[in-house]
Length: 204
Image (cartoon, rainbow, N blue to C red; front, side, top):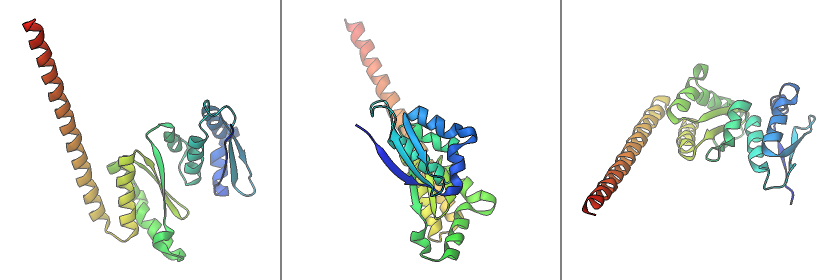
């Protein structure tokens, strides 16, 4: 059984996908058991399994290629090799319409002065963010994607940066408290189980 899927990335990103002396493309092919054919004139990419489907992961390779096309470095894109890490893309034309000026203004809000907005959202969510072309893309776990997606959409809709940051900080604190509570519950449960086992052993 074979797998073949086409994807198009900006031509200016083809060099990043291929890498120096073809190293990036080759490493993706070897790790995921695929063959990547690149049409340098159109930017079209064809991804095919080079091994049996049980020995290859062409869908994951496709995500990595798309992430590179969305502006991520190969190092960040390869975070997608982890099973619980995903790629999510926001089409900024949903907020800018057909206006090129509006699109550039929204991209500027998401990136911020000297990249501050993007950097703060990355720090508060743990996700990776790329604003490129007409899209904003996020790499992270489901929880990280949820928070980063919400923040980016709020900024694209015109929310103030300080309001978005404050909400992210509250969500981050809430998540920490929930993790602490879960850890305490598990520790208490384990201690109770251990105590019961000790008592049972003494009685016997």
